[in-house]
Length: 325
Image (cartoon, rainbow, N blue to C red; front, side):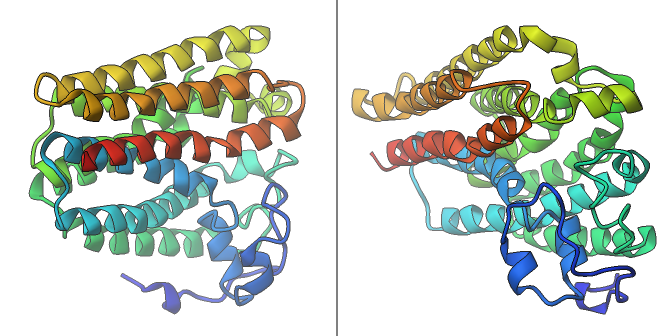
């Protein structure tokens, strides 16, 4: 397996930024020119995806710790999940760009990505993808054996996701299945088991993903029509607001149920109340997004999508506080 530093020099213009990256991001400003295309493949210039993959992991370990208390080993689970999310999000995005290279070349927002713009070849991208997976695997091996097995099993979801928009109107569901697997994995890393509480937390994350990625998909709906790509944004159309409301209710309800299943009857009222603030705070932030959405304004959709880092961190904060009580 080639290490990242052994990758061949990329082809094309290594300095070309990606259209939907944050202006003045650290990759464009600070990264060595030879590394920029690979970092762009991993979306290092757009960190929101790493946050959205990491946050359910933090939910999982916090909920598990709320049941039986924090342990010193949880510090590594917390940090290891962050490193693993960074690497696996990068690997998943690289795989997505390999499989979608023909689509990306036909869409204004994505044609500046490294593969369609000629900054890297498919072979170079594949080497980079496997290097990231190998490093993530080393992190995973430090966790409980059940968590290791769960991590390996998630690769199937990662592999399938880029193809979902070709055969279903619900590719956001497949993204949710992949992106929230960390809730179950991190729960198992702490407790060595998987419970109904972990499964309900996973389901809450899937509903949340359906909420935020439907907003995100509205950026590309016109291009998606032209190239024949499916999405919940196209499926829902003008009824998007009603569907977002359903996903909000599902997110809050499932997370609250996960808390109740995990903590009743043993938890005291203070611990239980703090943990239940998590879905409540998250729900209010989702409602705030709904009140500002304009599905026909791509910039607004992208801005609201990015605020979901704060949405998820609100829940992680209160679950973590409950675990200390």
